[in-house]
Image (tube, rainbow, N blue to C red; front, top):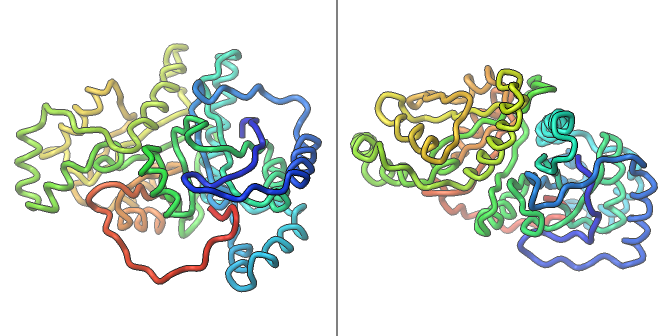
Length: 356
């Protein structure tokens, strides 16, 4: 992870009580002593592609969650302090973050002075004393811990295990998704970042899905044919694909198109014959492209994703997220569009500080 500032943590979109100043200064000193003396310069937020990842998406914190739920916050804090020198195990976003770092290394080789790189930000509102374990974990895996606010860091993508916080980010116009661990481990590339996107309500607006919901597939096909040359409105992750494309072009300009360490995929339930043209023409109108566009005509996405082995797959429907999980893909749900229906759930105990 890229070096950044260590600030008083807060949840995005809501207030959080500040930690006591002496504790925070103590933690900051601890961090500075642990951090490598020679480290790359942190890019300015407006120049970088900022990926914000919550602590519970980056690391596995299941035992800590259980302790909080069963024994309360004081025992939770005590447990964290007792185990602060034990790194957390990698969570679902960990391979994705490592792939981002691999791309950064290549970019620095080609463009030593450029700040147009990935800047990975750890988002947490943990108490400072609990934060020591996060800092230790990040340093264990070779990074540093910037803790900050999403909008202030011009966030291009926010990943969290907390669906409520993800919805708040989407409502604020920030590209965000709830990340889920796969049901089984599948090896992914260590040198090439692979990102797969659904189309409607992810890269594109939910216009076409609304037609399906209201009038059925036949009317949808008629609508898409009639509007083939009219670009779809943008969806919540269009900007993230745009950022990936911009970094890809930095490799292309050096004659490295075939060796580019970033590869993107459009994986959609649309049919290529009846409704695929509008999706491709929309991307073209934006000046964007994906390395592969896969139109499944309603077939399950999981088996194909197993072949692609992306570091992360984004979809707006939990049905497809679950199917991807079953086949070993780290999947992320984008809560946007007509496919989202309010769910009535029983009141849950408030999550512990930083359990995003």
